[in-house]
Image 1: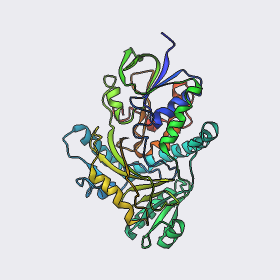
Image 2 (image 1 turned 120 degrees about the vertical axis):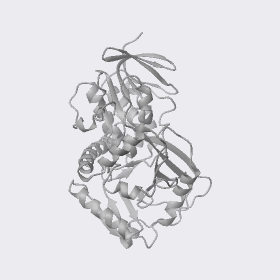
Image 3 (image 1 turned 90 degrees about the vertical axis):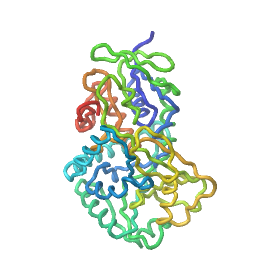
Length: 418
């Protein structure tokens, strides 16, 4: 029958990093993924690693800015109208988290996690693969209007209180820093600590190292029932047989509720659909990754490709592609950058980000169980926070003192799983 194993459910960045740090401690680990490695939200996102630009999703002003977008299906933040109590409850909690005090508390937690994760990326690039290396040239958040730039400058002052360095650039300085920027822009905020990588290459490369550390990787394998005895899950049923479980880590992103069904009440996660468009041969390549401020679109140079990523659509577990949102992604850079029009057919992708109402991940043990942990809820910061999340989960499983305080990440903080 074999020895009990630590079963990690989910082959995205969170699951792969968790499996890696467990296996590196000599634990018997089996990673299962219903599709392929990095087949979900980790596949073609912006790939930003942002210890500086790590603000939580709910922030002061988010509601007032977003009200005009909510019913615009092509806007940066869209909520598909539907009568669901879970969505209404999420929105109420989200509104409460947009206040200044909760925002600052969440920002401190995310900043600490992101700094630790950034250091772990450096260790991984040396120990495992060059694909784990973060290209640290900084991040530009560019704005067309002086009003939006002023608002960003005030936020930068708030970040400075937490030791997050930024640099305010006017339009001319922006063009000197990024030659692809259009003249006439109001300016930008530069985050010097930030960087980027190819997210799919990173997750795939790290997953490829798991077997050398003794882990098993089972792709095209769906998790089924989690069989419990008292306070423990003893066996995980899958589409390819059962696995005797020492511990179970549910790291399946937006699908965590369906996997943990029956173990605990539903979580407070909402799937936030995001899109990316990858241009195979753009007319020009920006030197730096950018966030197009008013459009809320990320532009990531991955030579010879250029990726445009963004939008947040709360529409449930819906993976359909909205042509209007794709068109908005393609249109946005034309107001900020010169000469990046696509040559050939763009590659369109979408994925579901697991979003909590307070902007903090869910990392820790599920209430009522001694060997079930949750690792999800990272929203747009999954790539940034992947390594530190994996490290924290591995430390909890092994009974080690976590390197960071995990109490703010308690997956039971909303009164159920999540």
